[in-house]
Amino acid sequence: MLSRKNKRFILKLISLFSVVRGYNILVIVIAQYLTSIFILAPDLRLREIIFDLNLLFLVLAGVFTIAAGYIINSFYDSEKDLINRPKKTMLDRLVSQNTKLSIYFVLNFLAAIAASYVSFKAVIFYALYIFGIWIYSHKLKKYPFVGNLVAATLAITPFFAVFIYYGNLAPVIFVHGSFLFLVIAMREMVKDLENLKGDLVQNYRTIPVIYGTTTSKWLLTILGGLTIVPIFFLINHFKLGYMSYYFYGSVALLLLFLAILWRSVARPHYVLLHNILKFIIVAGVFCIVLLDASVVLNRIF
Image (cartoon, rainbow, N blue to C red; front, side):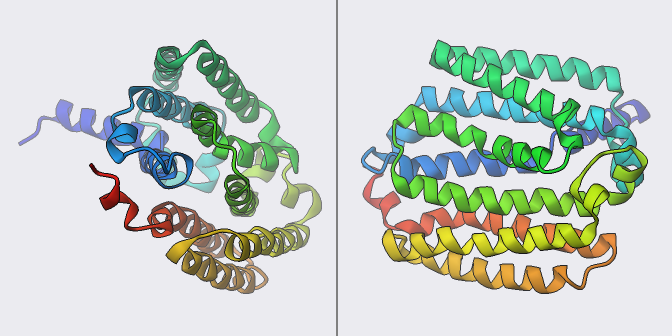
């Protein structure tokens, strides 16, 4: 039997994992490696990518930075989250605010160490990324439009480090990136609808707070419509292999999303919408292998 002290320690570890969204970070790591294998470095052998220490330390720098970002975001949003997500927030509060801040600085320091293994430019890149996350959490997220755009940009920033590392800035990457950016921007706007109650109490000037939920729904509809543009170019102008079926499925899910959106009036509806968008994002990560499923076997040796 575990002692009370050990149980509390395990609960704190679970709490910390919840705060840093460990499951999200794992998906980002997988996405970076799959993107490297199937899109950014198609001419390299599989083992050259998997055992590339520079790539590993770039990814680790991103992991530490993102984890620190979740912590500082939780730190500033603790009162709002207590209103919007009381059960999760009570779990997150098993780790004190002082401990969170200490871990935040340690993680950022580890990010700098990991980036320094690659190059001084990587250190500068992640230093700017850390600052961007902090200024977003502290100030920008409280403002309409700017907060949403910055949040979406920060979400895809770790991939730019890998793009720059491989020096591959092919058009297909930007078209893929624009689709991902639009879906993430939609997710950020849905989160504003989902957290409306807490934002009102804490005086966050989000789009639904300032302009109302109807305006938010129209903007989400416009963003959803804009996703058709990169999907059209990807399907018609680039070789996607079986991944084209992912984009057809995404169109169907986005149509379902819009149908539910205009009937949504309560937080559970917005949570469902949030999960639809999250599924599109996560499915997109694992569907990267559909670009050319044989590529792994062909490049093992």
